[in-house]
Length: 446
Image (tube, rainbow, N blue to C red):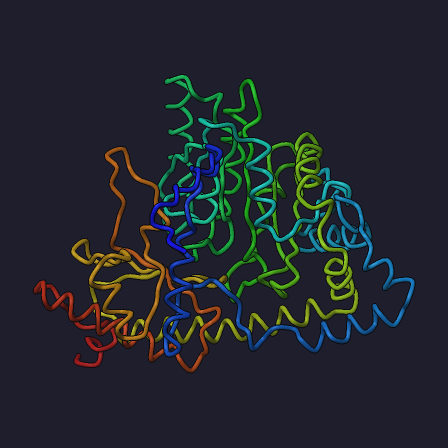
């Protein structure tokens, strides 16, 4: 049939929200990984497939389905809030993490909502709080998937810098003061922070800054509550350093903080299960939205998580993960020290899955750059750092950073991948006449 003269189909009138929603940058990186089977991917923040709790979950599901009444319950709907025995178990778990009773934070099992991954929590909180034009404040750089979500909701994402101690909370106070003087303080809905082993930098908000952030938020909560959304997805993947309490732990009346954690990183992402403690004033609106989404997260997944916490599978698997990821982190840091030129700097995370690299201003790491293309030619993939930044007042975004993840990549590939990446960087620096030896090579010549 000749279709040359057929009329063009009528357009679909998308919502403004759909038009604001852009493709997630990670999608292109995943496509690149699929296209090259030899690729060493330091890009995706996925967990190590070899350490997934297959045997544990097989035993747990067998136990659940051997008990017919329990199996029937597991295959049925539960409440939108989530399986009560699991919420009670998680309350005890949080008490251990915080080192204090739940009553000192004014929380009960009924203040915990179970969600389809902590990512759903981030979306639901944004959906309940954000109208187009409202303001959310985050660190620069920050978790780019959520800042993209915020922009699709119509939020203005304003930023403050971060350093080795995490978000600069004094700069946060200055920004809130400026917004108050200029008028739009009423539009500030929440502060977003990845408080443990940040994505993308791997850094952690220091203890003094945790307390100070809460003080600042209370100070500027004039006519409405400004909330802190504390994303603690990587909290339990701590390999060394001090175990810090959450910001939530200092919020004695459970008024200003939302703490969200997950089973994805410390156990198994396939469960798609997160849990969040939030103020009572926000809980009901979030449940209304969640009810419209899914009536409640998958009950079978909640039953598996409950059993894993009860029988010790969760804690044993977490220790295994910490051991394996610590090896990977240490190897990546050693490889960077061995191979990277002296002009390159990187973070030294005490946990999580990420290391953040900073290059001289002359090195462009963006997806359109020669460095990115050459890295792919060397079968190495990374996350360009500009994905994680918001523009400054002049519209500029730094393009001399990148994020490496040691989560999914095989440990035997780490040194090879870093060596390939370093050779690309070395060539670029030599072409600009600014190359120095790696710290390890320089030390060897002394």
